[in-house]
Each structure stands twice: as structure tokens, then as C-alpha cells.
Image (cartoon, rainbow, N blue to C red; front, side, top):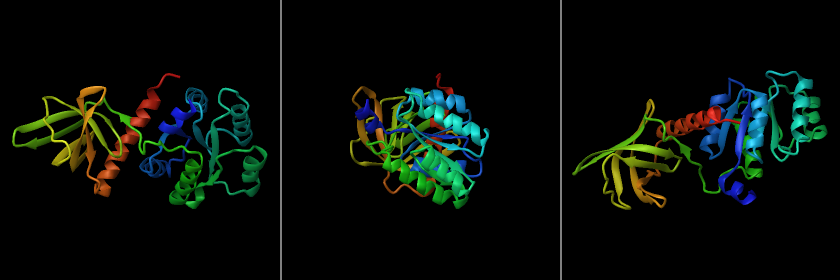
Length: 254
């Protein structure tokens, strides 16, 4: 289990992330290669930690529960044999040094205390450093987001033989896996120019490289993004990945 987890990386949950920083923080963490989800229910959060042993969760203690209730909640996780191996961190605008020391020194919260007042960039930097220390990044360099059921995730390109339309099966920061409506005789290696990717309301136009067929399904083509993909296109892709991840965790039965 441990080796598999190291390869796939660890799921990172943000419990009640503050609305002011949530989207920017998620963008930073996902673009850095971490599989991040938000949760809006502390009871469901516990069940998800059981579902995914070894996960990491940052808790915004400014929301929902009172201080004593958060203490009891955190201790209940630390004392539960089924989830005590998860990593816990604190997020808060509260700069009280005594509060910080209580969580870090007395309660031994392993993933630190993030002072949100320092801003999104600094908060993201601290969380990223913690995630790196806990080997939370996928060793494959990036994780895949499944979008097989999203009819709005499509790809198309045109060459001398006609227009090819495809359905995107999954996507990551490096490329896509897609199944085309008609057999696409894609050249291995050479750049395919001006491919258009539609991700719900976002459209990415970019050159891509055909990497080959999926070993387990020869009908699925793997295509890699242009390494010089623009920052705007990267943001469209990562925000779509964020939507796919959140949909998956929101619909998961636990």
C-alpha cells in the first residue's frame, strides 16, 4: 500500500477553506502537481480520511466550530486507529502565538500552522513546502483527472484527410487521452498543429504530439501538450482539472 501511495501521491483535503483565498490557493497547489480537494463538512472529511489512508488535511479553524470543538475533533482523528496516520495542518487568520503553540506543541499537529493573513502566495508556499516534506506529490510527475462522463470535454484537429473529432477520456498537466469518432492515423512524434481542446467553457488551441496508444485500450490515443504552452492555456487546463477533481470527491460514496 505504501509503495502504491508513493507512486500515486497523497490526496490533500482543505476543510472549510476561506472563500477569500480558496480559488487562488487551489490553483497554486494543483498547478504544482498536488491532488487537492475542498470539503465543506467535517463529518464527511473524517469518512474521506478513512477512505484514503495517509491523506493530508488542512483545517480552517476560523469556520464552523468553536475552538474547543476543533480541539476535540482533531484529537478524535489522532486517536482513531483507522485514520491516525493522516497528516493534519491548521489554517487560520488568528495570529495568537499561544493558539499556534497549542496546536503545534501540545496537540502535535504534524503539518503546521498556516497564517492566512500573510496572503495567498505565502500561504501556498508554506503548504507546498509541507506537502513536499510529506511526499504528497505523485511520483509520475502529474496525476490524471477523469473526464470520461463530461460530454463537453472534446478535442479536434484537421489535416489533409479531413476533420477529426475526439472525446477526452482523461487529462493532466502534460496532456490528454482521447478517443476519436473515426480512426485517426496519427503520426508518432511529429507535432500536430492547431489542435483545439474544449473543456466546458474553456477553449485551448495548441500544438500537440502523439505519444502512442494506451496499452490497455488501443482505441485511446495519448497526446502531449506543447511544452511552451501559454500561461493562459495552462490556467484553463488546471482549472478544469480542479473541477473534475471536485466533482469526483463530491459524488463519492463514503
